[in-house]
Structure formats: structure tokens, C-alpha cells
Amino acid sequence: QSTALLAAVSGAGATADGHAVPLLANVGGPADIAPALAAGAEGVGLFRTEFLFLDRVDPPTWEEQQDAYREVFEAFSGSRVIVRVLDAGADKPLDFLPPPAPEPNPALGERGVRLFRRFPEVLAAQLEALARAAKGTSARVQVMAPMVATAEEAVWFGEACRAAGLPSAGVMIEIPAAALRAADLAAVTGFFSIGTNDLTQYTLAADREAGALAGLQDPWHPAVLDLVALTAAAAGGSGRDCGVCGEAAADPALACVFVGLGVTSLSMAASALPRVRAALARHTVDDCRRAAAAARAAGTASAARAAARAELPALA
Ligand code: PEP
Ligand code: MG
Image 1 (spheres, rainbow, N blue to C red):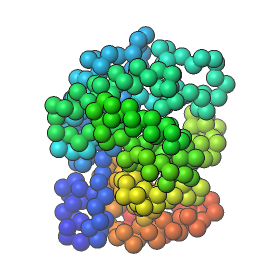
Image 2: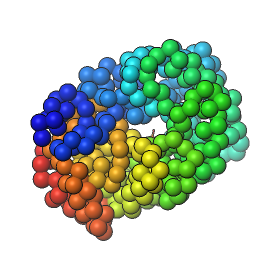
Image 3: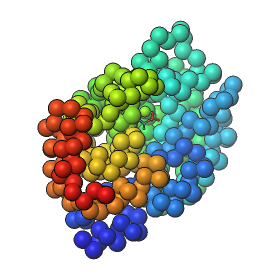
């Protein structure tokens, strides 16, 4: 217990019985660096790079991107920094990456990694900037692709990363097909990061932007938990890391459930780190596993939440 209590103060995430769970920060630009460091983030689990591409008529050159990446890498020197390449389309449309025809269902359209098949030069410039920025720092830079649905996409992305001199490539698990066939993806990629915002949207077929459907955008839904469990099991079976970087990781009870399902790291807004760190430090891995099993045995999202909380008595 004393190791865990020390970790709760010093910043390293761990359960009460000393099982390490790195707690990482979601970063959307340089302004997020200081709060992440102040909250004791052990690295960056999701560096969203869209800020460099928004409100422009042309994509930024690699030279323009390099400085912004270096700033984050230097702030987290010695730590893991997982960079997500541009996730445009759907809720993040960009003028210089227009769809070939109007998309009636943008969330099901050409977004994330799919866009790079038609605009490979945009990915190449970003990877070049990342490789050059990484070279001068000691951050452990990893790169991941958003909205990966198939093993072919994962292979294609991994090859592009290797060609740019970035050997550590992974994929986000945000699409049910990717979660259901996570073992196929684990065979061809380096790591997983589960994006629960999109995974919930696509599992419940409920647009995350539609306020009227907000009740369905609930990551406690047992169907979402089942997909997280499948993904974590496939990752574990292949010796791959499996993080969660969606907003759900910021819910202390759900964070414990994810650990119980086999998730190996959690990434969240800096403001959520202290409460998640405290929740983990007060529960053993077995507590987390019991909470996960109880949640998956429930028939609804609200029953899953209640069942998990009943197994996590030390939650604040
Ligand atoms: C997610 O989908 O959970 C995620 C982390 O990505 P974004 O919210 O940027 O789509
Ligand atoms: Mg997403």
C-alpha cells in the first residue's frame, strides 16, 4: 500500500497492489503542456495535431509543423509521446481536403486515415515533420492513425511511418470492426489506443454531435465494454500496449473498469489525472477485475455503472 500511496502523490499511476498503469495526458496544442506537467502526466497518450491544420487554405508545410512538435517532445523528454496524425473529416472538415462529392453521412465518410489514401502528401509532410522533430529530443515518440477499420489500413500506415523513419506506429481503435478483429490488427501494428468517443458513437450508431442522442453516447454501455475487453485481450495476447484515450478514461470508476479489462495505460485531460490516480491507488487489480466483470454482466449502461461502483468501495 505504501508504494501506491507514494505513487499517488508523485504522479505514477498504480493500483493499490502496485500494478503500474501509466497515466498520460491528452494534449491539443502547446497550451496544454504546462497543465499536463503540473498534474504529473507520465507522458502524452494523445497529441491531437488538428490545431496546426485548422482555419487555413493550404496545409502547413513540414517546416511549419516541426517546431510545434518539438515543443511538446522537449517538454516530455524521456517520456512517451503518442502523436495522432491529422484526424480530419466529419466533425473536423478542412477546406484543403475536400470530399470528392458532398457526404450525406460525414461520420461514415472519408475521415481520419481514409483521407490520406487520396492525399498521401499530407501524411508524408506530417511524418517528415514528426521524424525531424523527434530526432533532436529524447521523447519516446510513437505515431498513431485515427479511424482505422481494417488490417490493410494498419499495414499501409505502418509502412508510411517506417519510410519516414518512425518505427513505432500504432492504431486507434474507434470502429467496432477494428475492435471485433483486434487480433488481426495486433498482428500488423505496434500498439492500440482506444478512442471511446468514436467507439461509442459507432457502436450505438448515435452521432456524437447530436445533442438529442447524448443519452446513447454512454461508454458504460456493456456493448462498448465488450469491445474494449476484446481489444485489450487481443493486445495482451500479442504483447501489445493497449491504452484508452477517449473521454471515458477521465471517469475514475470507468478507468478502474478499463484496468480490469486489461487496458495498460490511460490518457485524459490533465484536470482529470488526480482523481483517476487516486481511484486506482485505492483499488487492487482484483477489485478492478471484479468491477469490470460486474459491469459487463449488466444489461444497461446505468446498471453497469452501478454494478461497477458497488465493487469499487473506495471511490471518492
Ligand atoms: C475518441 O474518438 O475517443 C478520440 C480520442 O478521438 P477524438 O475525440 O479526437 O475523435
Ligand atoms: Mg476519435
